Image 1: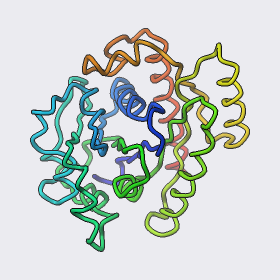
Image 2 (image 1 turned 45 degrees about the horizontal axis):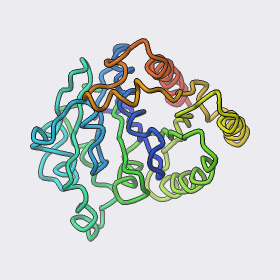
Image 3 (image 1 turned 180 degrees about the vertical axis):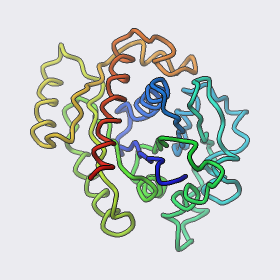
Image 4 (image 1 turned 135 degrees about the vertical axis):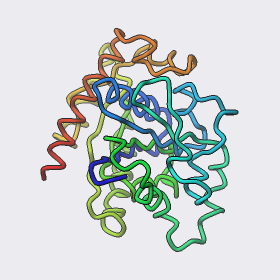
Length: 265
């Protein structure tokens, strides 16, 4: 990857917050507006790969192979059904990655090295989005060490802010020790139900606590978005006109504007 490629880690240690859904649909939206995008699936569950229609038997080379040095990024990349969007798929092999690389002195830097050494992809991608597992483990640390910025999906629920402080603390630790240029790209509020008074209160609380870090775009709770992965499609391909798809297109525009500001800073 060259310096023009922006690497964004999509992370939240809580499960069920729309992290993978956000990674898939944001990547698709960015591709739809002309960017060349790659997803690095670092979740052993492989939901990003499944959600983009990559069957398990097709994942002959994966992010596990990239992290262990058995393959480079280009060898592991697969084109998806979305023009301009490729993916480095995940397999269950990732469950054993901690045991495999935990003794290596550069164990947190495996992904950064792989992305930097990937000469064949230089200039190929505008954005690489890394989908992390729902935990702050070695995979997530690798993603943050490799990234320019972190995007945090946050569900509009009562305990939303509880886990956020731990994640922000981890980002600060990575910035202080491994990756001083790491930024918070933004916080995106997900699964919002405007009929729910608690959800509205959560939005107000998060905006009060985090200010301009929170995106203006809010992702609504939407049946069509939930259905899409079972068809191996991003919501934007499954139903472009649904409210969730339209929200992700808006988010993509907001991400690009924010990225331009981060680059200029």
